[in-house]
Image (cartoon, rainbow, N blue to C red; front, side):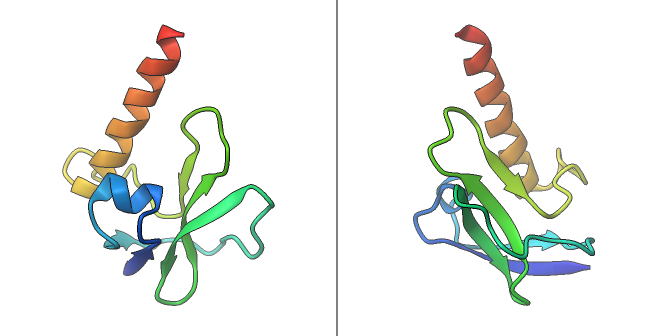
Length: 96
């Protein structure tokens, strides 16, 4: 099943992906009911499911998604961008 996700305007995900609405696979039966104090919700599906988060004030890469970004990661432009960004963060961390 696919879902439209609305991203926070100007948020990390919107900036990375260059848009405020994305379409993702939605294959889950669980999700965030109440976000913790440092969890910043960055994307919601039409049904209110939290689909994208970041951790406030994290010292490094701290993004999370509810959808299966590993599915077609090389072909899907949204998932590819996320993995590329994760790779850049790993390389930067390794240099330190």
